[in-house]
Length: 380
Ligand code: CAA
View (cartoon, helix red, strand yellow):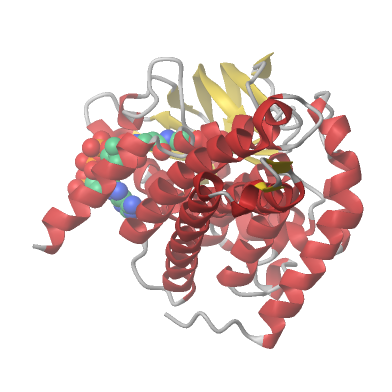
């Protein structure tokens, strides 16, 4: 792994950092009220940020995976909401079409996703199928020149706001995970409805909805990959997606560490800054060490993905560790801020609320441990 970032990567990091400070930070309060950041996404599209690792031939910025992960990391320091929108849009909505789509699908869909003209979503989870993704019930039946989809999906990030949905449904009852297929579904498809909006603990500006399929008519040519390949498409793309979520968690943790360190130097008790009291300085030391370790895991996984090497185990490790770190560091940051940390006058309570879901979506921490242990057994 080479952690000496290239000049281009450092330029990208600086550009995103400045953009996040100038454009995203002033909009955080609006997002906290539940406003979806469409205007921010438009500006990001103008800078090529909606298709960072997508090749030029499909209108992307043609940059490496590390640059993309750097962008999520930088954005998450300011807004975990914008970070998750970008991560889902790129890793698990655009990438599946880029990796498994035919030329026509890439031309029709990836080009518009990469420019940000369209926003993407990834639709796997159902009311009774979360961690056990292969037990999904949504069905797709072939009929003449289309499939008819019936069922529902829940907790869909970008639901309702997205134009393009990667939807997984069962095309065969008796083949287990090999009976699942993937579909590209456009917003506005007859029989495809947006259901209820979730009221969440954090990520207030991101949209999380239910999706309903009532005889939704999906053209045959919108099958992604082959029939029965859907589960593998989902899993393969979640490997990359998990690096994005790990980078999001890393950004949240780093922001909390920065704020807590600054506050601990300003705040005086017992005649000296609290940073000079061992109870607080040791906390800061542990927080910084864990943030650094998370950073190494995140950029190791990104580097493997960029090299085209297997990254499933390292992606799961990065997500597991970075999300745990985000929870621990944001909890300690509130503790360092004391009573002020528990108020909405300081951002640490938002970081804490935003951090929790990193241990849940794109596979819970328990699922990451399953993925890691399966790799360990396979490697034996
Ligand atoms: N890449 C390619 N193929 C893979 C794979 C991967 N990473 N992981 C598994 N597969 C293949 C296996 O090789 C196997 O293939 P064969 O049948 O040919 O042998 C097949 O898929 C089934 O694999 P498993 O037997 O391991 O499957 P399982 O049913 O035991 O499930 C699991 C494994 C890891 C627990 C999986 O169900 C899982 O990841 N669950 C969590 C689901 C999840 O992450 N959901 C997140 C929802 S998306 C989201 O949150 C997005 C958002 O909006 C923010």
